[in-house]
Amino acid sequence: MTPDAAQAGRRRRVDFAWELGGGTGHVAMLLPLARAMRARGHEVRLLLRETGAAAGLGAGTGIACEPAPVWAGPVREANPLNFGEILSNFGYQYPNALRRLVEAWRERLAGSAAVVANVAPAAHIAARTLGIPSFEASQGFHVPPPALPCPPLRDWEPAPRARLEAADRAVLAAINAVLASHGAAPLASVGELFEGRSMLLTYPELDIYSERGPAEYFGIPETGEGRDEPPWPEGAGLRAFAYVYRYYPGLEALIETLERMRISTLMLCRDIDPALRARRVGGTVRIALAPMAASSLLPQADIVICHGSHQMSAQALLAGRPLLMLPTQLEQFLITRRVVRMGAGLGIAPETARPDFGAALAALGQGGYGDAARAFARRYAAQDRRAALATVVARCEQAMAGLAA
Image (cartoon, rainbow, N blue to C red; front, side, top):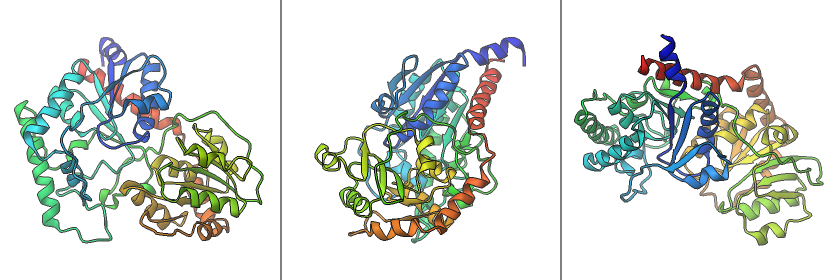
């Protein structure tokens, strides 16, 4: 590598892209990477499906934040059997519609030296047509192995191969039509879109694709979090750290159970009903509206309660704390299954009419689940979580330097 190439690789614009999905988790994954690249002297920009998510996580000055191009047509609500069907739900099987989406991404990425994405397939397609290196920073759910068809997501129910293949072939035909229109090489499978471009920021135990085979896992990087460390409320012994959604149907029943069992609880619940929060003042459940310092508070807890988001689940396991998981969507449900199989937690399915939170909390406080969580923590105790961040930065810079050479 020549000095000029290295210099060009160090000082160019890097775009961070999020196209599909919802919530703050996608931005929480990208933001530390963007900050690390900016600290290295690069110009960085966030292209986000929901720009408000960045403000909620304190993107701060110096990082431009703009809306990402997204599918504007109707989104099918059908339960997808594999990743090909997920893309079909967002119009990826329609060549003309996909072409318009990719063209919008091409316009946004013009002048970019590299793209780092979290669930932005159209950004990867656009990057291929532009000759720009792209990377997918992912927990694995949206990075299927390069097989045709993509593996089924629900291994507990029938997944007709003909249906999986039909979805994948329709999506693949549309993607390849767009690539061909720009003289780019075709793909042999949907998963090949990410081959050689994925950074699996997860652990083998949490990867939902058992079919993936040997892979490079980096674990979760250090991410941004709150600074507040509120005192634990008075309780009867057990402590619980909770991160729950205001729209979770069992929220009030969960809070009532925690108070009845006198479990000292620090709970993050953004935008919770003010009346519900006011009724809990002075009880054993202290409800915060802004992120707390999880890395400091998790080791002080006995149990972690969450919806099965990858980041929160992994943080709890790295702290050696068992989980009560309340999934609200498919990816969370699949992570919950992995944790339950590991013996490090219990899950309550979203369709459960009257969940027995008390029985689950009592069981989690009795040892066996904690043993499994602590075993996970020991396996990764020597891992430097800063290494994942450094690896993403180094690979981006190497790719940019190669492009400039």
